[in-house]
Amino acid sequence: MYPDEVPGTGFPTAIVSGQTPRTGHRFSQNDKAYYFTAQKDWRRFGLAAELFKMGKFYRPYMDYYYEFPHDYAVSAINTRNYTVRLPLIEDNDDNDQYPDTMVEQNAMGYNIISAEDPDGVFPGNDADNDGIPDNNKNNNDIPDYEEPFLMFDSDNDEFVFGNDYNNNNIPDFREDDMKLDTPYDLDRQGHHIILRYTPIKSVNLIAGSFRTGGVGRDNRTNDDYFKLFVNYDVFTIGKLYAEYRYERIQDDIRDQYMQVTTKMKQNYQEPGIICTIYRFTRELYYDELEYKNSTVNRLWLDSVIRAVPAITLENHVKLENNEQIEGVMYNNTYQPADNIKTLAMVNKAIYTKKLGNWTFSPGVKFRFYKKDRNDIARPGDYYVTRIPLFMFKYDISPRTDIQLGLQGIPWFELDHKDHVQSENDYQGKTYMLQFQNRVTYFGYDIWATTGIRFDQIKFTETTREFENYKSSTTFVKIFLGW
Image (cartoon, rainbow, N blue to C red; front, side, top):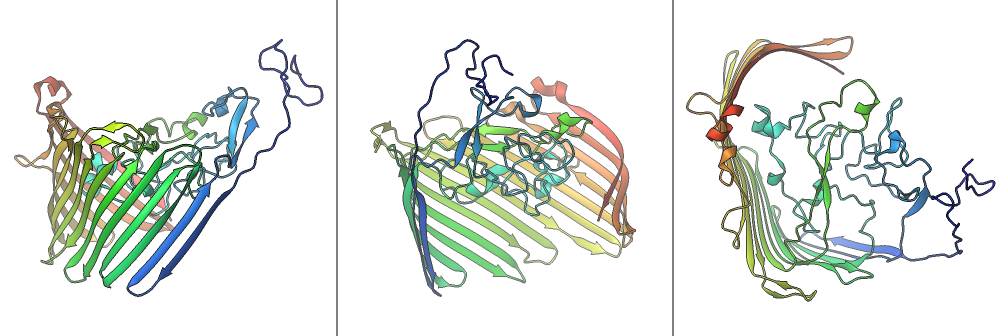
């Protein structure tokens, strides 16, 4: 029993021993939360509208007395005066079996302790729902877009495009917003109206007006926009998807968000309960409010073309021009004129030729990313990466083959140039020869490989010469699945 305990309750009367107990008064608090949606589609036209309000005092959570805030198992829980906020609606942005945060641990498995989603929170980055991010499919501590060979088919988040209605520079479908999964943010009200016109099957024109603001305070996210979609698919040649957006944005609501690094912690698979807390590090990103009063043009192009049967060309282009309007704004603050420009581009060419049991597949990939603004002489980010790849494969049988992969060769290495910080410039080569076999055994699918790998990295700047290295590795890997 606590020294100062309310008789028969088990609760202390005061956190500090000897402190005079404080009495409370009974009260109630009521508010409303609602939304209405309507949608009608015809062959060429469409109309959709929604009206919503999340009341200022609408609280889908309760304050929960938590007696052991410093216990090891819940050390990641944020408590104050033995009280923790217990949500009545889960925050589960990646839509898996675990909430993104947990007051009471409910991770599946014996003695698994977790205050966070134990397999990581990466919304929009797990298309096959296997609990592994799509840009780290081999489930190690290196993202695929930084790992030799895998980087040829994977790119980092700067090259992802999608709707960003809260204007915090991350597509909404990839955002871990740290908020309860209510249809709209708390303390918000507004409306959204959308009109669609489809002149032909592969083209859509959309105009919309989005208005949202605080119920109890004067802030806003307003967006009037026009969108043009082109989705053209020619089965014998390839496909083209293009999207252009013109937006007039006023947004002074700061929407912070979390992202996992998709670099699995190195101690995650070590024995002991400590490894079961969480696999990935979640990092907090700050909304820079780059769209407080802006006119924005966005363009996204995505094409896969195979005009010649053996050659495939892939191109992805993301272009944005954010013109910040000078003057005194709606919130009585002054914004200077500026222009923020972003260009992210991926170009890839692959040639594939099969002769008997031999398959030869060379290719090259370029990544280009630049983000700058007029009032700063040097760009914020500006880098170019060249990724050459040569693959040779000999099929011994339908289940057995030998592969030789070369990512970079003399005079044509992997080349990374950082035009903002030249000390990050480097060249690299990776060679790998492997023998692999795949069999089924009593319903299990067994894949095994053995081989040798050579890696070399050479930095351009003399200040980083001590980081140059060469290494060789022999490996044996066996995977058992079903």
